[in-house]
Image 1 (cartoon, rainbow, N blue to C red):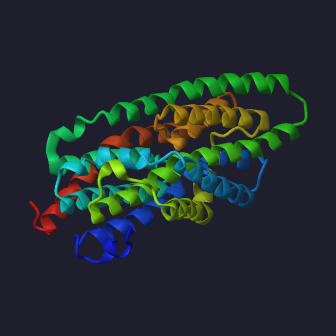
Image 2 (tube, one colour; image 1 turned 120 degrees about the vertical axis):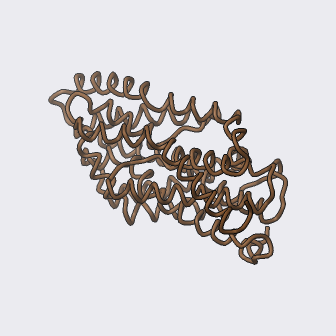
Image 3 (cartoon, rainbow, N blue to C red; image 1 turned 60 degrees about the vertical axis):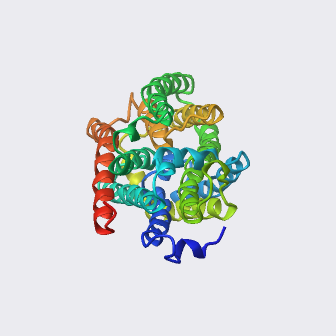
Length: 341
């Protein structure tokens, strides 16, 4: 694939914006998404922020590489959700650009309020809104949405319940005992969660970058294969975002995350199992929702701030309608500016 084709202008004047937006999107994912994987371990004192970030960065990269071995299903899913396969390539580039700009804007706003949002859900909703601006109502009739919705259901209420149950059991069994073992296990939990995050989001956003290639070079969607450099770039940018700004989001978890290491391990264990099982089943799940839900459940007896909990739920609920609407508006604006309407 020729990188120069993305910036040459021969394809579309919007393509350089699409490429830069995809790079920025990978970075902001590290602001509001990746920190959830290390929040419980940092809050319990198992790891310092710097050590947790370094450990998470390495396993994010490993997870992204691991999933790249299994082909390009992530890129194909993003391509399918965008609806760009059946429209002019110039309009396809606008859909992708509008979606990514939407997620960046949404993530920056969430970062300001210290809310751990799901860039995965924001991206899917933004793709829906941006695509509907071009192809109309049929953008909603995509079978991929069944997977997305099932992932939303799996990654919220069930994990709160299971984490609460596991934390209650472990805390009761280890009452008045040393927490050293569970702090060590939380380090393993950070590895597992970061690996899962890289496998899900590292590949997901590398897939977005790959779609730009497909559009620029007129490739067939069925033959998409995520380039290794895109996987590396995605994982590195996510890690950089977490290093630079992740502590702000981690601080918001202190109001809900359990300080007891056994309860923190319960949150790590439950969310890790859920993410791994969903990955094996091919169900796209938000790592942020999965980990935050598990943390909420594990800290339910001692750590939950009702105000923080309501804030999280509010942002989770509005992610889909807000990003879909913003994606639609930005897509329409770009279509108008480029005289493609």
